[in-house]
Image 1 (tube, rainbow, N blue to C red):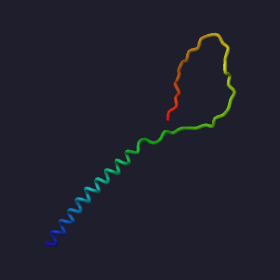
Image 2 (image 1 turned 90 degrees about the vertical axis):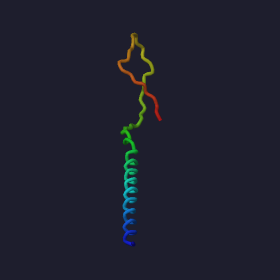
Image 3 (image 1 turned 180 degrees about the vertical axis):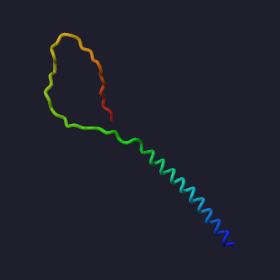
Length: 74
């Protein structure tokens, strides 16, 4: 009788241990994948002061070949 009870207890411990171990393994994998992509690599340079012409006297037309719109993003 004692051997049967011991066998059932060991069997149940193995089953529940396997279930909880598998759930823990799945949770760790999900947490590792939730990290997202690595941060973007950026470069920085020190600002410096330069002289700038504020106007230009010309006659003609001006057309941009390619242009971009620069905005701030937080």
